[in-house]
Every structure is written in structure tokens, then in C-alpha cells.
Image (cartoon, rainbow, N blue to C red; front, top):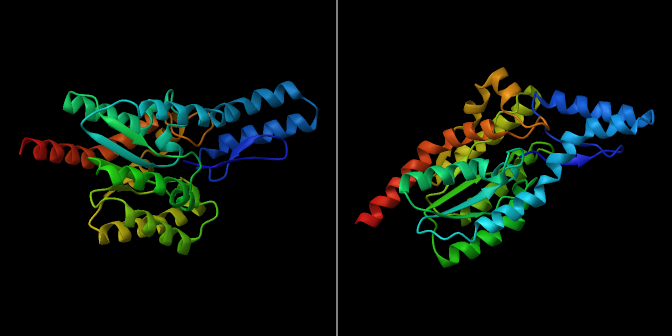
Length: 269
């Protein structure tokens, strides 16, 4: 979900860290201080959790490319950022996309096809540039049974409401009319949440004008409070862990389950 960058000391940190980002900032500060005093062992130890998750990005991308080879009558197409990929989870299959796929398979009693186009660190601008052309190729062949879009958290660091509005419209102009669109999650920081609330207002306005369902992810993550902050994030302190992604999947599920039931009903007819 959140973009990372490499600072002058070589330490990975979050560009939009939520409240628990204090942990990430503390790790980064410790690493920087250790390097300043020539304490390379301490630098490596403090920096390790942040680097470890950054290094997951090519691994998760490869995992989803391999997952795409599995066939199934039901097809799920996902667009998004690192949360779609599953950065921070114990395995990419424990991202919210993976957990939703598991639930769909359990409900249908059969394997499903999944095309996960999510790219770690992607804002809406890069979703338009990179994911949308690939989605158009998929849609040119057939309409998936389920499409989800969860994008925008990486726009918050350099918030441009005009660009966000334009990009989201561009994306949803291409995706099917049954697409499920997610709100941005709660960042737990007032100065970022003001931007998130503005972004979510646009998500609702743009999606609802098209008759699209919106996942109430902001409230679902906000109400987790301190419990969520201390137990539902990965060691980098800004990506969800398995439990955090389960909260996401729980929030998506009622709308996704409706799509699954509609698909089953169409087949029965």
C-alpha cells in the first residue's frame, strides 16, 4: 500500500506511514544514528525489518504470475498496490486478494482463476499507466466474474486532488460496471487522514455515479484503534500482516459474496 524510499543512510522508510509509523521512524532513526557513529552491526539490525519487506516486492510479483496459471471457471481480476500483492503478509496468498480468492473457492467448491495486476507502490497515476492497459487486454477477451480496485493510498504523500479525481475517473471508465471499489484505509494520523477523507469523498462520488459498490475500508480500519496498530501490521510498521489483511478481506467479503452468488445464479439459468 505505502510507498517506500531509500534515505541518505540507505534505510527504507514509509512515505505515508500511519500512526504505528512511529515504530518505522524509530527504526530508521536508530539505523541512521548507528551509521553516523560507525556502528554497522546496529545499523544492519535496525534496518533489517524495513529492508526485508522491501525485498519482498519481486517475490510477490512472481508469486502472482505463477498463480495466474491456475485455471477456473470463475475469474477474479484485481487492480491495486502492495496490499493487493500482499507485502507484509507471511505469503502473498494472505493478502486481501488471496484471502478473498480462498473464500470464493471455498464457497464454490472449485478452483478459480485470479489475475492480480497490483503493483507495489503504485499511485493512481501509475495504475492508469501500467495496470489499466493490461486490464484492457484481459477485458478484451472476456468480462471477469469479479473485479476489485483498491488504489490511492500512495497518492497521499504528494496529494493532488485534481490528479486523483482525473485518474480515478480514467480507471473506472475502463473497468466493468460491476467493479467493487475500495475506500482508502485509515492512516491514524490527523494530517494524513484529512487527505484520506477528501480522497474517499471522491471515491464515493465517482463510484456511486457509476452505480458501483464501495467497500467501507476506512471505518473498518479506523475502528481497530490501538488493537490494530499494535497487532495487525507487519514488522515494517506500515503494511498489514496476515491479521490486518484478514480485516480487509472481512470488509470486502459481503460485497464480493454478492458477486459470487450472482455469478452462480447466472450459471444456473
